[in-house]
Image (cartoon, rainbow, N blue to C red; front, top):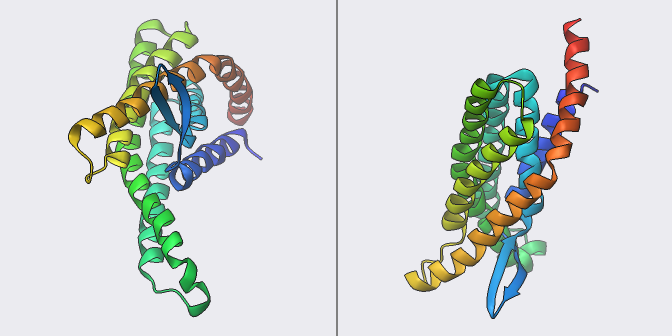
Length: 218
C-alpha cells in the first residue's frame, strides 16, 4: 500500500463520514447558562486539514488541489444519491420507517450541500495561505504555516457551513444568531485547539510521507 494512497483514502473517508453524520450537534459546554454546541464532525475536520498540509508539504499545492477536487466529486455523489434515495417510494416492508429515513438522509443532503460550499472555499483557501507563507519562509517553521493556514481556513469553513446547514427559516433572525453563534464560536475554537494539538502529527506525517516520496523518485 502506498502511503499517499492511504492518506487520500483516510481524507475522503473523513469527508464522507462528516457529510453523512455531521448533522448531529451535541452540547459542548455551558457557560453561565449560555450553551455552546458542536457538530459531531468536529472530531474529523482537523485531521482533514492536517492531511492537506502533509500532502502540500511533500507533493506541492497542485497535488493537494487535485485531491480536493476529487473530494468534491464524492460530496456531489453523496448529495445526488441522497436526493435519489429519498425521492424513491419505499416498499411495503419499509413504509413505516420511510419518514425517519427521509428525515435523516434529507438532512444529509442539506448538510452535504452546505459542506460542499464551505469545503470548496475553505480547502482551497487553506492551500493558498499555506503556500503563500511557505513562499516567504521556505521549509522553516512548519508549525506556523500549519496553524495559521488552518485557523484562517477553518474560520471561513465554520461560518459558512454552520450558517448554510443549521439556519432555521422557521425561526426568527435573532434566535438563529444566538444558536449559530453558540455553534460557530466553540466549533472554531475547538478546531483551532485540535489543530494545534495535532501539529506533531503533521511533522510525523511529513517525515513518514517524505521517505515514501523519496523512494518513489529513486
